[in-house]
Image (cartoon, rainbow, N blue to C red; front, side, top):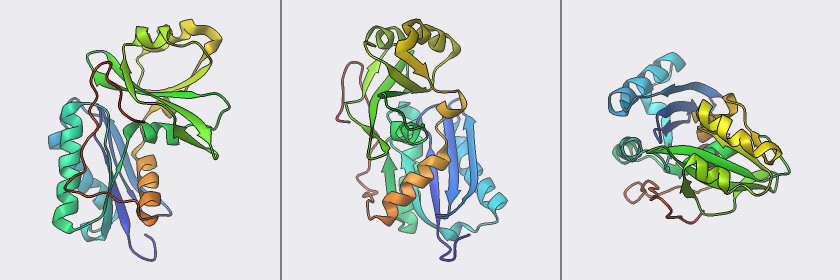
Length: 228
């Protein structure tokens, strides 16, 4: 643990791809990522307790909370945000909300082509965010929108690097775009909660924290973009 003894708890329940992590600013002390079949409510608290035990950390060492804010599953986001906000309010801890697609983008290699980061939002649809490298980091450059995989393929008119939650069938479909599409590897397409923890720590230490009472998830409607 760091000399200051501060630990950040990161929580992501945006989709079936779920995770938690403990970070002290220097090391990921414990990280767990798993596929939840809509059992976030019963899995989250025990997973955090288990991570604290494995890392040999007392719960009082947690000094901040970072939480993925979506877009994603309505139920998953509601559960994760409720837990993180409750934890923050009861213990009077700073909370940092991070858009879920930013977590994906953070993990990708720096490239000279634009990137599309995607995750599942139900009914066979994907939330899609566009990113470009600016200042040696990926930055969101367009509103997030929802597409079916076929609509996404039809809209590709230039080379893109694509990362995120894609099934085997969706990967085969997007490969029909030929050289216009480069797909991230399956391992790099997982929203690792360790990356959420790193982003949250940077925001926390720079003073970019949120109000726990007003922090809300990002919900999208089909064909209804939000500011990116």
